[in-house]
Image (tube, rainbow, N blue to C red; front, top):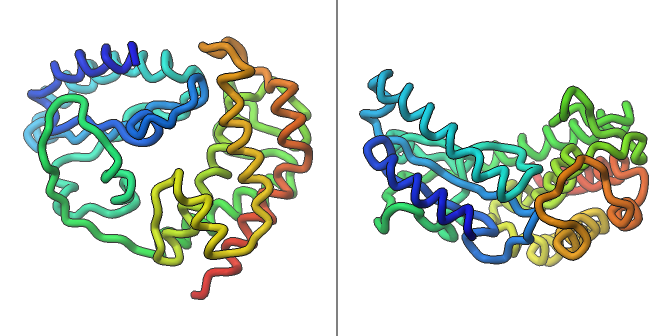
Length: 262
């Protein structure tokens, strides 16, 4: 929590620009895995900061300087800070961050109730699941996942390039997000860490890939030193995950999507 405390210290200096600075996910609920878990945030920017280009330019400079803390927490971090404005709160879509995530979030800078006009669209989440199935289908056919490259290099099937841990982490994280997306698509949204059990209660599916991904996440602090200093996929991970992971991912996503009644 050393880096989060430093982030909190510096985030408080942004009060003139932002309404709030939330952390959510595993660092908020304290079930993170050191070295694996990234820091998820939601920065709510004030309307007057958005409408004044000089303030917005200065805010951009200051907030980009804080991204260093994200990568100190997780060198394989896949995203920076997530932003919305206080104007978005009046027409807040679950695509920003679902309510289940917000309920489990904490503020780094102030204690206040955040009022939002919330709406949820099952069609959006069905489309999201469809897009993931298409991504996995293309990866299965082409033997390469054309998403989240690192230095122009993509993740390939059957560990054909083992110097792709950044890319592999994105793939495994997407696998672990499937239960949440599916449950939202059927109108039974759930918080991520509860979604795995709820998925099994709603649908009998071959979830071995989800279980392997979560097992890899749980073992990461045991096997890997922090910070992770290279991009090589560890041998123990290869053994747990097994081969033909794109084919198995496509089969899983297709099964989830096919079970939804349109």
